[in-house]
Image (tube, rainbow, N blue to C red; front, side, top):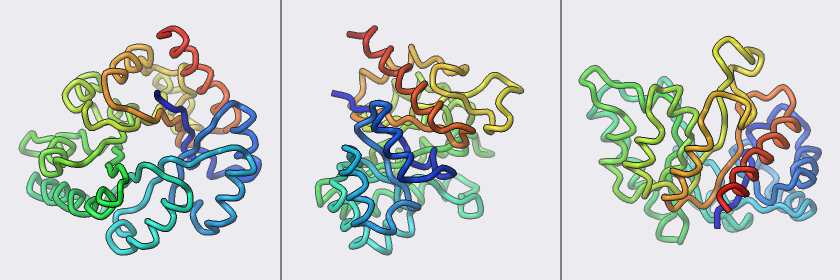
Amino acid sequence: MTELSYQLYSSRNFPFTETLAMLAQAGYKNVEGYGGVYGDLAGLKQSLDDNGLAMPTGHFGIDMLEGEQDRVMEIAETLGMKAIYCPYLQAELRPSDAAGWTAFGERLQKAGEPYRKAGYIFGWHNHDFEFVPLADGSIPQKLIFDAAPELSWEADIAWVVRGGGDPIDWINRHGKRITSAHVKDIAPAGENADEDGWADVGHGTVDWASLMKALRNTPVKYLVMEHDNPGDAERFAKRSIATVQGFERVEA
């Protein structure tokens, strides 16, 4: 059974406590954490409980995953997480050639070992840069996968599109790795400039009807709504969950 969730990064510019209450009222049962929300762990757990929300998945930076394993484990255990995802690599740290990306894949494979051993799903969450061909024509995301056979994938579909990739093709070829997917949308060219060109799910250009069908052939467990810069987080949250629930009713 696929569960719907909400990446709290979407609401980083809005009051946290009000966000949790809004999400509960909008029908969400799950949220996804990121580095900015883990500071007061006990307070976070209490706030989630107070609003009837769970945090089954979370984002953690590569340095923390490698250097603060005990802290990551503490956060994941306290919040009842099932899956841990590495979300990003800063531009200045990104390799420039195939050997570098292969080495990064090996690094992710090794970084995930203690978390997999502890029973967690461990994966990579993509952006667009992993799908831009290198000088030799190779694709960083493919190099990462080839070097990390046990790496799960939180597929951020809209970033695949922005990187020039065909999301259906990637789902078909690597769908067995997908345990979570970010559900976000891209505004038509020239629109929503104040929201960095993103759109509420179902109100943009991404063919989510077809993508949902493709994702059903994968082990995906969590569908996580995300918008990188919404002007109105409540509008985004409510419209997006309504879109996805509509797809689910059609499938049923």
